Amino acid sequence: MTSGSYAAVDLGASSGRVMLGRVEADRLSLREVSRFSYRPAVRDGALRWDAAFLRRSVEEGLRGLDVRSIGIDSWAVDYGLLDASGELLADPVCYRDSRTDGVVEQVLSKVPAAELYDVTGIQILPINTLFQLVADPLAQQASHLLLIPDLVAYWLTGEIGAEHTNASTTQLLDVRTGQWATGLMSRLGIPSALFPPIRRPGSSLGRNVVSVGSHDTASAVYAVPARTDRFGYISCGTWSLVGVELDRPVLSTESLAANFTNEAGVGGTVRYLRNVMGLWLLEESLRVWDLGRDDLLKTAAGLPRRAVIDPNAPEFLPPGDMPARIVDACRRTGQPVPADPPEIVRCILDSLAQAYRDTLLDAQRLSGKEIDVVHIVGGGSQNELLCQLTADACRLPVLAGPVEATALGNLLVQAGIPDPRQLVAATQEVRRYDPSPGQPKVKS
Ligand code: LRH
Image (cartoon, rainbow, N blue to C red; front, side, top):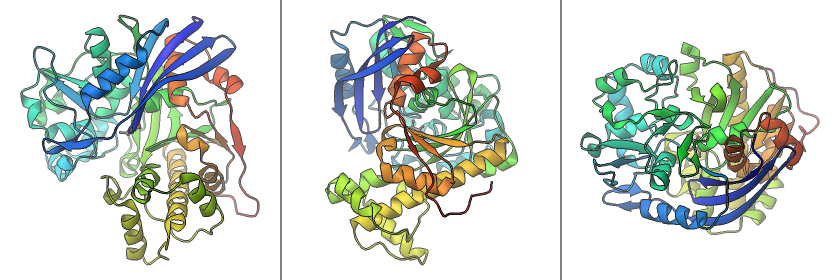
């Protein structure tokens, strides 16, 4: 390992940060040097990210930093298309855009789900790059496709490539070889020439940039402060990514039916998980209400559990009036209808906790891996009510933190730490939540 200062560029669904980290054999510290907010907006007929703003913000955030290297991570599946001269053809489209409506069915009529799963090991979600590309008219005229962190790396270095952990989320990577699934691409009319060579976390890109687990979830899981391997994780932010870490993928029919994914982890691991719609439900609701989060959470904590919805129902994916959709879902399923914002908040958090429990039980059943603790990392680890409800639902201790798991995972790969989880456990704040007494133990 190399002690020193490192920069982590961490781009989330609603804000990006440049973090400055100091890594030593027995110390790990982190400081935010810049933060910039954004939201995809409708332009030229689609919900798009503002690429120029992202580029400018990252470059400004990094200016003047004296670091050994820089690592970049972001949300998965979205991409930019470049022309032959290396210019973006258009602002990248956000995975929440409706262009993929109906595309899953269209693709599955050409390549059956079982085959898609056997080749890629990835859960079928309309947000996946594969479905976006089939719906993207520019795909046929582009020269290169770069996933978001690879696009930022290209701006900084001029090098094109596809980092492995994030490339796995496209559903266009062969889960066995770790290389692009060109046979699949040609059957779907996706030009394989778009895809640059795969690079692994830890490789150098030049100009001080080092490839990290560029999928934010891969970086977060790398920094889970687990002391044994019998743990489940919830990487909890806009999405909740819920699962276990494995040595090899699970590609069974049952796993496909349960919509579990085998995303590539740092160091050849498999992130066996399911996406749960996550705090997006709460964030979108807060946006509609314009009320204070802390007060709402406090009131919600004093309420009983009354109704639960399926957070993964497709109507919750696009931006919009989330409270109205939640009320509607409760009414349709014949449950008590939440009457005010605190009741809706309570319904969201109970629904998430239940989805976490179901997902962790499925993960254990399908993989054969047993867990005796649940780690919650990321922004959601600060939500005390959610952590307690999760401990209660899972009937397992929850260890919450670090909040900055993604940035830490990014830095730890750059520094080449031999036992990263041990260093995180020894240096970062982690809070324990035990299941409340008096409820029966859940059987897997
Ligand atoms: C979380 C995340 C998740 C993906 C989604 C698109 O930020 O990367 O792992 O499924 O965004």
